[in-house]
Image 1: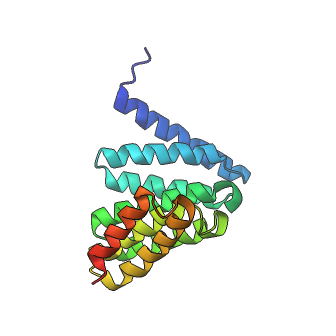
Image 2: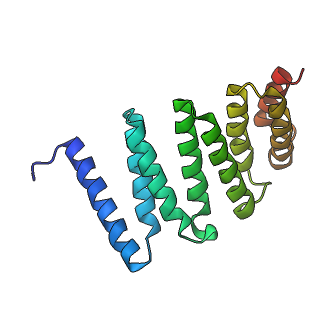
Length: 173
């Protein structure tokens, strides 16, 4: 072999990705696949509890995605925003997380539309944040919004609708 071990390979992969991005940025165009590589590395670091490194890589991936048209990279940008928001929730940086969740929802609404099935999941992430902040009065409108989309997309008798109804019953007092 070339002497690289598992951890060394990831360090080398990260160096190559960052160098390639810097080179492409110098040419004024960054390939979206480089952002995907950064996102995978960020996920790896997060799973290793290396949160600061993960946050830096998520932010770098987000910068790559935000340089592309929303129609091309908006879904990846919103995914990156949610992953970064979840990381900030873990760190207790709830205000910063809320800003990221809201940005992600705006992007999703613009490129996918509010009636897309991924939208209720995103609303749920924001609702969980509000629960963690004790902002229970703000959860119910989000839950009803998600429920309406789920009923329309999945049918009133679907399990996800039942789950949403149970959630609403828990918080709507």
